[in-house]
Length: 226
Image (cartoon, rainbow, N blue to C red):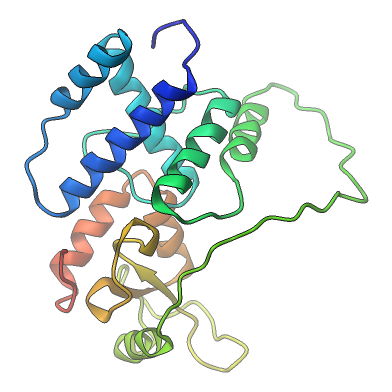
C-alpha cells in the first residue's frame, strides 16, 4: 500500500465504492472492480493496487464487525488500529446502523497476541463507562419463532442438535440473517436460519464464511437471494 497517509476523503470514497460494489454483487449485477479502482486513481492519484489493498482492509474491518465481506476481496489485516476505527465509523455512517466500536480493540488484541513473552496484564479493577448511542432495527418476533420451530432443535448449518438447552428449556439456537439487516437484508424467513453458537460465530468471523453462506443457500430451501 502507498506509504503516504490516507486522507479522510480517500477513506470515505473507498468505503463508498466498496459498499456500492457489495450492494451490486448482492443483487446479482456484474461488477468490474478495476473500474472502481481506476475511478479512485483518477480522484486521488494512488495506484490501483493501493486501492485494492485498502478494499481488502475494509473486508477485514467488516469481518471484525461480524458483517459479510465481498467475494474476491479477502480480508487483509495490514491496517493500523486508528485507520480501522475510522473505516468502521464510515461503514456505520453508510449503513445508518451504529453499534459498539470493535475494530481498534480487536486489532490491539491481535497485535498483543503476536508479541513473544507477553507479560501478564494488571488489568483494570474499575473500567470506565462510556455512553454509546446504538440504532436498532425493529424486528418481527414471529420470524424468529417460525424459523426456530422449523429447525426443530437442529442447527441448519452443521445439522447437529443444539449444544444445550436455554433457560426456557428449549434447544438453544441463534437466529442469523444471511444478508444482514444492516446491509439491507429482509427481516423475513426467506433470509433467516437457525444456527448453533459455533456455526453462528463462524459465518460472522470465519475464514470460510462465504462457503458456509453458499452451502446454506443450496441446502435450506426457503432461503432466497435478494
